[in-house]
Length: 143
Ligand SMILES: CC(C)(COP(=O)(O)OP(=O)(O)OC[C@H]1O[C@@H](n2cnc3c(N)ncnc32)[C@H](O)[C@@H]1OP(=O)(O)O)[C@@H](O)C(=O)NCCC(=O)NCCS
Image (cartoon, rainbow, N blue to C red):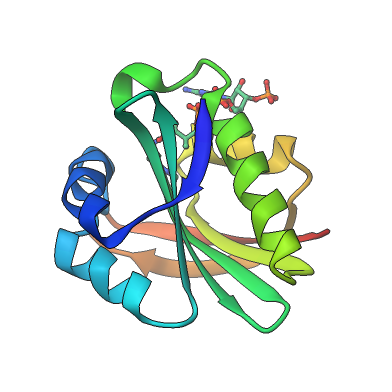
């Protein structure tokens, strides 16, 4: 398993991975994120196969996780934890001191992942999400 920054030529493949989540990213949106100086996108690779994609923004010392998706067959096996830990290490090397995120209040696997990695709950944004409607829980991790 390898975690590497995503290359523009890999955005199509990455979009297919994110399409398996509730909120996917189009290839164009991923390319735009990469082109923007603050966008940081990582891929989890096993040989040639892209198993996961994580999208962050990094502004000065503040990172924010915009989304993390594994292919459905790869979920629930500890890979999310490994992937997110490696992404955070790379962000830390790039100067990040803190990571913020928002998560759907009904997304138990994601909440378990974040809390298991030490993210602390800060609050809730009511009715933040649509399709389906849900509240957002906000979390923070200081490195
Ligand atoms: C969220 C996601 C990245 C987590 O990755 P994962 O590989 O499935 O999670 P892991 O196997 O590494 O498990 C991490 C923790 O979550 C828990 N967990 C995993 N699946 C779970 C489930 N279905 N219900 C409850 N807890 C679960 C694990 O027990 C583990 O907790 P622990 O460290 O206390 O043992 C993955 O499930 C996914 O891609 N989901 C769809 C997209 C998504 O919802 N992304 C998050 C919002 S952007």
